[in-house]
Image 1: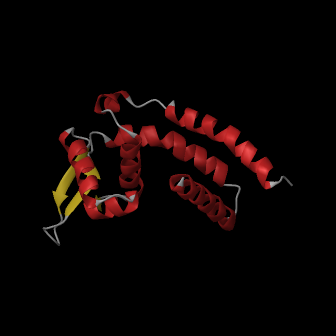
Image 2: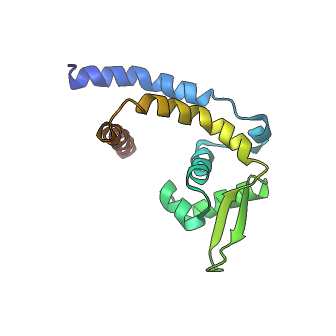
Image 3: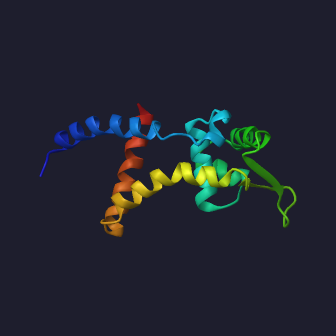
Length: 146
């Protein structure tokens, strides 16, 4: 079994390659003109995997202020990537979804990463997957703390 320092070394060598490969995933031609940033990818992934959400739900999941989420949604709505509709139950709430025109391109774009994660995580038990995801979250929090 490796020491913590051995594991740290492996991860420090592995992470730049993972990030580099993720950055090389080609943006579908239909989405290239939108200048999508990583924050947009996360927003689109939530909408793709979780379905239509309110702006406040998106803000909570993205861990950003509702005003910031609203600005992002507004930007992508003006470009035709997202659609905002009034909630039929509470007209004060806005429901956000990916437009039908752009959903196939978003699905193609995110499916490569999703399929790679499925392949990597499938052999693990539920507990092992939870440990792995929890470890990545803890790493992200530690990096953000500085």
